[in-house]
Amino acid sequence: MANIADRLTIQIDLSGFSFKITDQTGGTLFSGEKSFPSVSSYGLDFEAILKKELSSFSALGKKNNGTDVYVATPKFTLIPTHLYIKGEENKILSQVHKIGELDEVMSVEIPQYQATLIYAIPNSITSRIFKIQKRAKYYPSVYGMLQRMLDNTDNNKICVCFSKEDVHITAAEGNRLLLANSYPAKDFVTAQYYLFLVIKEVMFNPEFTTLQVMGPLTKSQTKDLSKYFKGACTF
Image (cartoon, rainbow, N blue to C red; front, side, top):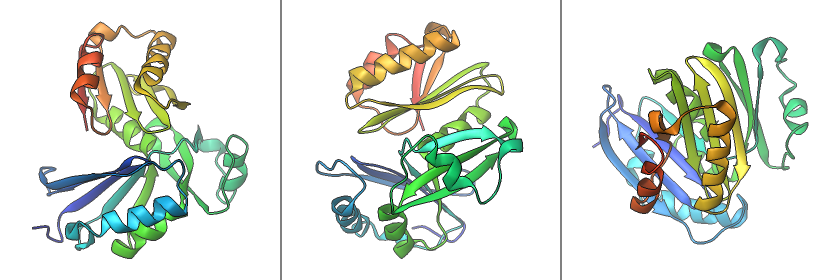
């Protein structure tokens, strides 16, 4: 049973969502996930499915100490904070991505990297989550990956998130950010191609690198990745 001191984390992409409720120590109290039928965009069909499936977990509507929602979207850009101008988020993001009419453009500073992340979250998600958690905060999956790397004590750090349409990858050496990008990948083989392309670009040795994966992995995916990396762990 969730209480007001607990936190709720939700991860969403086109293939479904997963969530976990954690206590003050970070321990998982309750978790769940739902897979969606085939949808190709965060449009009305997705919103209708999300509405239905969110209602199947009463715990998602309980009061808590904070709700973080991570959306697997490629619509983001990372810029040096000294170049960031509040109020120009749409202008900056539209230079690298097409912003939909119902996209909500947001930003968050990451002081450890001296950078600001600008991103777009579909209204089909924010409007549905607002119904159950009015104070929720929204981030792209890449933000969770960047935060994860900051908590990682390894020197060579790489995080990946496999979503339905894209693969999102971040890499850092110590606290020096090397890369944060998304690549079109509708299958795991293509996603692996981009992952190893990044590994080559940043010159990491996968045999001495533990891969951090945001979201679930199947047994076969874990087996495939373990052939090349020191290890693969999910968060």
